[in-house]
Amino acid sequence: MKWQIHKFEAAAALLQKRLDQALAEAIPDLSRSRAKKIIDLGGVHINGRRVRSCSTELKSGDSVELYLDHLPLDPYRIASEEILFQDRYLIVLNKPGLVETQPTHARFKGTVYEALQWHLRDPFHPQRNIEIGMVQRLDRGTSGLMVFSLHPRSHKEMTRIFQEHEVEKDYLALLQGRPEPLSGEIRSFLARSRQANRVKSVACGGKEALTCYRVVDDFGAMVLASVRIMTGRSHQIRVHMSEMGCPLLGDTLYGGPERVLGRVLERPLLHAARLAFKHPVTKEALEFNCPPPADMHSIIARLKEADNDLSTD
View 1: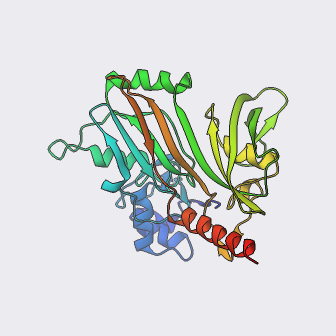
View 2: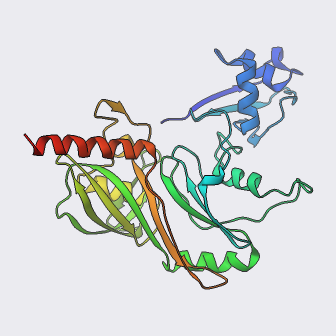
């Protein structure tokens, strides 16, 4: 899913007009109501700074950038059923797929980080800053478990727990093809590729990444794998699975199929299914599990059904 970017300099005809009106006039097929929503999300920047007020007026020489990520313009808000655990120190969420974890050029409002600020806000002091520690990140397309620290007493220890790999992170991944062997580990050094937003294994100069996997359901041309990452590198599972010839279903960036069983997939089918660590303050052993969401569950069910049909022929 590629971003769309519109750039222009404020022409004389746009000066001293409201920002939403100026955008609608400058960009073909952009309505004023849609422009208002994009501004509110944080997808408009003037002279390199995000602007979220529709009443802002353009001035001569202003450079305007509008970013579209093609996600819903209604901002994501955390539902009560997505909260698996919360005390004064931590919160554990089940993140939906296709929600950004942290602010991007295209949006501030509606990311997990901003939605968490909204969830935790004090209605009597709405302007008070809320200190949130982000110790992990999930790709936009990845669903599943995330933990955030909420208190100064937990921030430093949670950072240490993740940095020293004292946390167990298990994922479920639907893969094209069958890995050989059916269980094992992949160790490489990962670095950014020259291709936009891609990562690859390199001989030197990258960061060490270790991925352990095992096939838990074999459907022939596709498998369901349980994957544990011992490190937390960007795109780690997606890169390692792709480089062994088994890209994730829906992961077109790394060679995975976009269409499976006649259905177009909107995201790589990867789900953070289990998270286990010691509470940073109480030292209680915590473990959280959550099943894959509907889109992934539907594909698994259909693969199992097709596999059963073949086995009875």
